[in-house]
Image 1: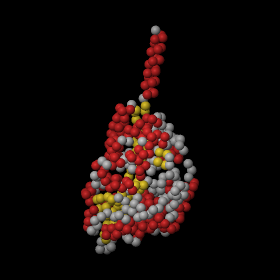
Image 2 (image 1 turned 60 degrees about the vertical axis):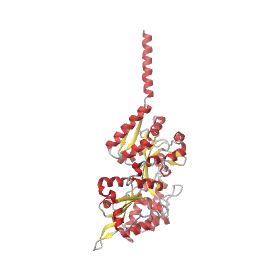
Image 3 (image 1 turned 120 degrees about the vertical axis):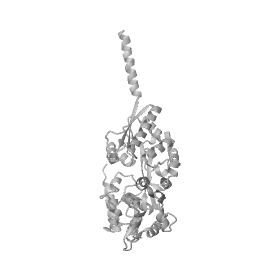
Image 4 (image 1 turned 180 degrees about the vertical axis):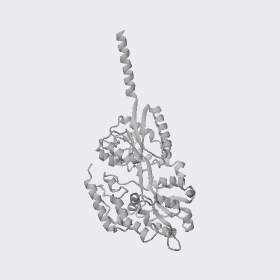
Length: 429
């Protein structure tokens, strides 16, 4: 009797142990997008569908954007974290983690997803820039935002302009026609405005001029160049020579979108996904009076493209389960659902062929601009210090000092190069 009871107890323990061993659980972090209720409903649905399909339970956590950088920094420095994360700056955080913590290089699993050829068939090549560094691959891009140009079609019609600007020269010419002054010479409507993020705006002008921020090996500053000088001079001239852009564009309190909504600006450069969504909410009467276009060009036609990706993190409890969760998420049908709720643009070719994007009054122009998109040269951990969009960062200070007239262009470029090189050389991981 005792022997039978012992056997039953052993079998029972094995069943419990085996059951718990087979019950897979992984954690997933993502930032907050769209409305919290819609995002929560979607994640509830997706995790339930995934568990029914695979038997794997996903516990998700929505991270507020104002905590995202610090949380990813802590995880990349060795703090506990998720199995899978919605991330950004993959190379920077992987360098900080020294291939032990933070983002995991998942190149060895690339064949599972069709290899490099399969990835390029699935995504626009430009959108893979932030997750592929040399032979390292950190995950799937899932959201992007390309900066394009928004303009008031009714003001264009009044000025006799029939086509959107194509070049820097067009921007100046159109800006002069669209800038309106009262009888005392005071400007009542500016022809041109730049969107509020001073640093991200400068990416576009520098790249369009053919310049670079860093040398090819990403170890030295390349900012002190004829191309950077041309870009700064062009922005300066828009304000002080052509007088088509307000000097207030560099003020922290300047709100470029509000100026557009109120009819005080005719063209807004570097407007992204959020511009269209905000316009629909804040000034819906302007939807049929607003259009977007592909980026203007100088030497090149290129636009800043921000984005994020889903990747596996070091110290994951189950690499295979994490990869299955990525496989599950990265289908066109689920990505369409995800981008609708998160109010982002998908980097997947098939998703953007959907009428939801292609036929939308604003999103259509963003999708058209993807092929001109370029992410930043975020291949050095000091990059975030160099390009932080606030006083104290070299690029921000350079642009503000030049456009305020506090510093000449040559002097500003020399000083910025020195400050950048100091950060690049003395960064401590």
